[in-house]
Length: 144
Image 1 (cartoon, one colour):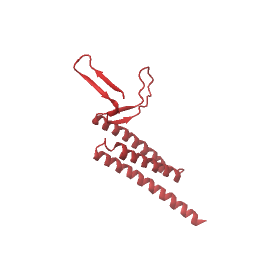
Image 2 (cartoon, rainbow, N blue to C red):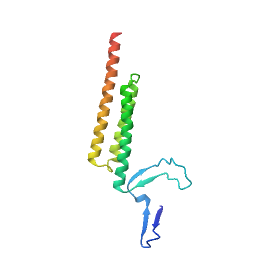
Image 3 (spheres, one colour):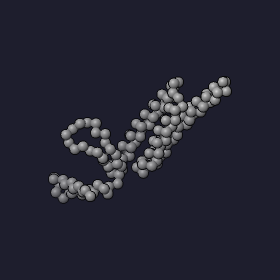
Image 4 (spheres, rainbow, N blue to C red):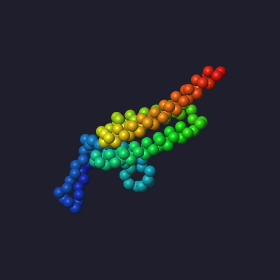
């Protein structure tokens, strides 16, 4: 079991003992996009609740924007097929489950509820598109 001790040299009475295995917070793996000669961080834990919430809100809004852009392109594209719609539905379901299972304890209930409503709207649009594909295929089968 590793422990870290942080000592402030300016304030001799301030010592912080950290046992990183007993810390509860939001764990993530940094992307490490910038090259430098210092320590390479492979895992980080954020403990402060306000900081966790702001990071997750930014991360989730960026992710939702990416899904929205992808789904709008999918709905407007005539060459997209039913398989693309099913893949998008699966991705939205995965995102929703991550929100519920991993991030629910860190996010405000009202924010989470609004985010889940937005996901539900996107899922409904994709289901409508999938129904259109199915109706189109049935009409083609009847004509033959």
